[in-house]
Length: 336
Image (cartoon, rainbow, N blue to C red; front, top):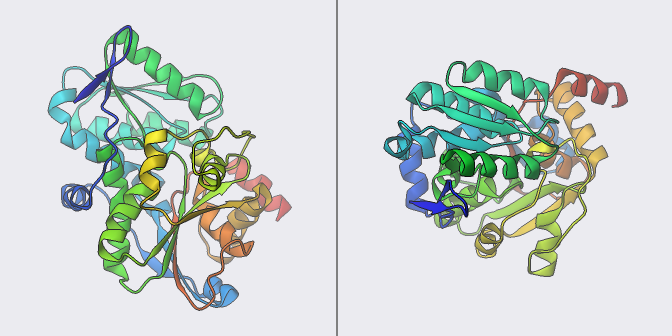
C-alpha cells in the first residue's frame, strides 16, 4: 500500500498501471459527488477548423477543474487508511482544491503544499473549500519545488503523501472524463488533452482506447514546459529547459513510470507557444463565452494555431479547468 521514504514518512505506492475497470469503478463511486460535465459542439471552432469540434467543459466542474475526480477517488478508496493520520499532498493549485473538498467531506485532515507562484484565485479557493480541515503551505517556485517540500513534510511528520497524478486511483478518477466523453458522443476521432504529470491523459487514454481503439489521443503542452514532447521524440526521458508559463497546471517534469505507460496508450504530443495560449484564453472568453485557465486553453490553442488539423474530423477538446487570476485574464484581454 505504501512506499517508505528514506528517513521516514511514506508515499501511497506509485502504482500507475491504471486499467479500464478502475475507471469504470471510479465513475460509479464518484456519481453524485462530482459533476458529469457537458460535451458541447462549438459552432465557432467547427466553422474555423472545418470539422466538428466538441468541448468537454471541465472548467464547469466542482472547483472548476477535473482534478476533483482523482482527488476524491483516491481519498474515498483509501479513507480507512487516512483516517486518524491525515495526508500530505502538493499541487500547482487545482489538485489541491480537489483534496481540500475531499478532506472536508470525508473528515480527513490535509497538509497541502503549493508553489508561491500558484495563482491567488486557486489559493483562495483551497482555503475556502478546506476550511477547518487543511493547512496550506506555500513553498518555492514551480510545481517541482512544492513536490519536494511535500515529500519532506511527509518524512518529518510520518504522514502519507498523495501524489497529484502518479497513482492508479488518481488516474482512474481523471479517466472518468474520457468515460463520459465516449458515452456522450461515441462517434469521435480524436481527443486533445492537456499534458502535465500525465494523470489526465493516461486515464482518458486507458478507458477510451479500451472502448474505441482507433480514437487518437493527443497530448498538448506549452513550449515553456515541454518534457512530454521532447521525450516522446527521443523515445526516452530527456532533460528540457523550463520557462515561466501561463499553463502552470501542466508545468514541470514527468516521471519515468508515466512515460513508459504512455508508450502504449497515447498517440502523439504537440507543442503550442505561450502567445497561442494567450490568444486561446481571449478567444474562449470573447467567442465562446467561457473562462478558461492556461492549461484548459491548450487544446483550443492547438486548433487556432493549426498545430492540429481537425478538418473533416470529430474532435474533442478537453477544457481541463477555469481557475485563472482576474489580473492575468485582464492582461491577456488587453493584448488580444
